[in-house]
Image (tube, rainbow, N blue to C red; front, side, top):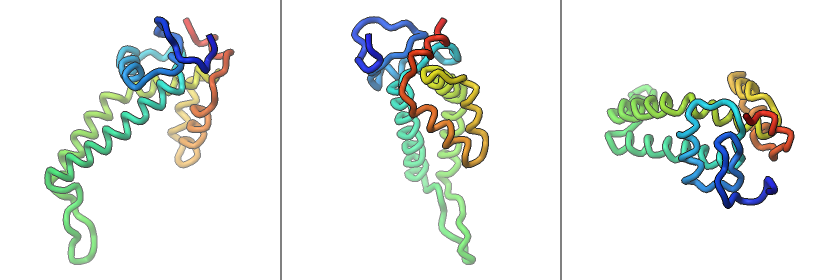
Length: 151
């Protein structure tokens, strides 16, 4: 099977699922909660990235509807926090804690698919340039030599 063809049969949990749909990417994300071995396809990674953006937008909308994330400015022009900020912050914090480990594991596995060490995902901790470097690595196409990270 080519790495560019969608998968039609059962796929091992350690093998990347090329051509994964949103639902498959979502379920594999949670089933492989803390699995740092194996590989993840670009579709698995970017579908989950989209879910994260949608979740963040929903939390912001909920916070805004609950009284506003940002309150009216003060007389000096400084912004204040609205009553919805607590709701927004709570939802964002709980979501962030829930997806911290599986998100790190997913990026680790995505780097494995490009035949790089998953530890390179820690470069994202370097301000400004770190996330750009990691972005370049996760954008790379799959490398067949990445199979060395499978069990």
